[in-house]
Image 1: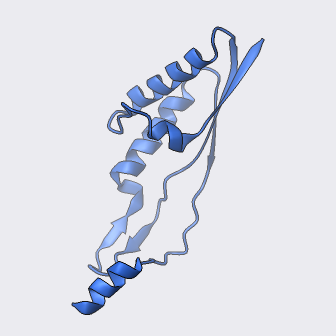
Image 2: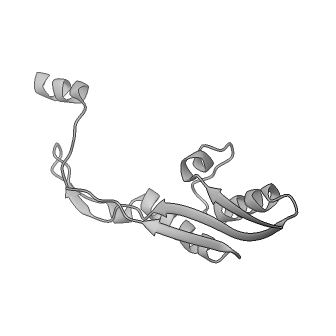
Length: 117
């Protein structure tokens, strides 16, 4: 009998011991978790769904500095993690993409704080 595993990225990231500094370790830990979960069955496929990190440049509305999301620590980690995960046996990586209209939304509390200064 074959096993197929679906992974909820958000729940996995909340797992105790998740280390966002080492993409290879995270990919290895995830694969070990899935293979242990298959309980000795033939692991046919691991389906991993996620989205590529946002890769755009925007201007911070307050400081007016340019922010490049594609070079952030999170984006760098996730891109490297996806590459490590793709190298694993029986893993099918399905990546969507994020849309952004470039608009900043400030929470009401932040807006009040900014207007009071």
